[in-house]
Image 1 (cartoon, rainbow, N blue to C red):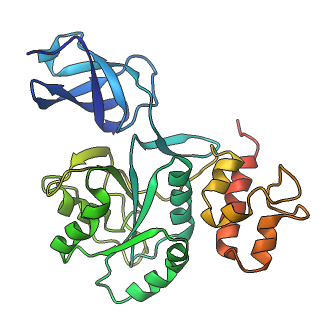
Image 2 (cartoon, rainbow, N blue to C red; image 1 turned 45 degrees about the vertical axis):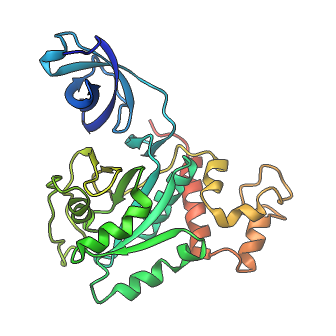
Length: 306
């Protein structure tokens, strides 16, 4: 096989310390199982890495030497741990469902995370065939006012799902994120014919779905050029790693007022002559969105726990 002992590849699957990568070989892509030595961590799907083949390229296994520079990294963090989603992505597609009820807090946090890394956010309202669709649409009105892209899908109309998402996903590396039970796996199965992602009916009694995806994996989209990363459902989205400037940039409605406060280090809380809180009082900024900002800022400012 014509392959160098050290070669670059892209991580397409991650579970613990086990990884799969794609390597270009003689005009096609070969998949290798990879491992890391020692306690090395911090590798995620989307990473470009350099490999070595201690047992030879025909062994099917490789050693990840190091991770190349990333253009971005999507992750969540709190005072106890960091959870990597993916790197080198162009689009964050956040799937929310008509049922079960989705969390405005988690949706807002995901958008902030994307914006802070220069990733385009897209909101996918799924299961719009259900009777409570208008209630879900009303919850998303604030994001429409912010000129964020919002599309609607239903697994009952797979052809329409493809045509709806193609303008956003084509030619890009996108990641699907969402709470459990939002129908994310159903959308993946439409976009990737051989994904075989498990789907399930959420429990009405519990009001939430079960986690059906346990690993993060990158797929080639079946009907057009593009790649999509599927990640496990989440129920928390800490952003403790953000600086105040990064956090503020995650709220585009704040931007017209940034730099107009009396104090250069204004946190936009109780300081006098704050342009953002003044805009809040004048109803130019949503109270719910401002409350989300203060919750995240409090987490970022909280002392470390040991």
